[in-house]
Image 1 (cartoon, chains in turn purple, blue):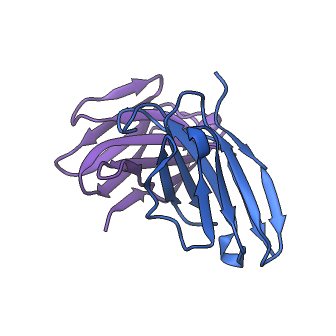
Image 2 (cartoon, helix red, strand yellow):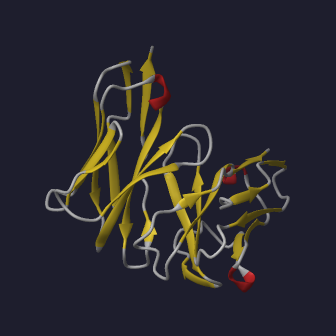
Length: 111
Length: 116
């Protein structure tokens, strides 16, 4: 059965800290992986990863995929209180093109 | 560009009643997905439309759930009759492209369904 595990489940840090969020997956016919940030309502898109070893960056956030070891990480440097959210990863099962979500990592950044 | 819109934002119904949720995807997006988040659990896939056709409905819990996407534009998800375990947040998402595999999902704000 397809499986996505995110760790840690939750994390509390202080502003300025750097965090690494993990996503490991077992998905048949893997094609790509998405990262999302969810605050109060709709998850908002962060990154789409399709190739191993190529880092995607957006400001203080970056992400990388390892298709051999079946995991991805999301890094946030110099965290701010506005980074507090649930971070979700979702690999794509390309059999029928459905994204499978992990339970998420809840990040709280204290001032 | 207008985002994915869902209606209503919150619905409270009694067990046994019927509820219909609506999703308007981003214009031009062929792929439309329904997901559900039950409290404390992950966002679970329900089904995927490509235009008006059901590509994958393997996540639909049972035959009390019926999704439609007439004309390939907006979609509705009907729950009839509702049970307590149907409570949760129902998200709709859309993406471009025929297969959906090369573009990200854009989510609506969700409909919070409470069955009492």
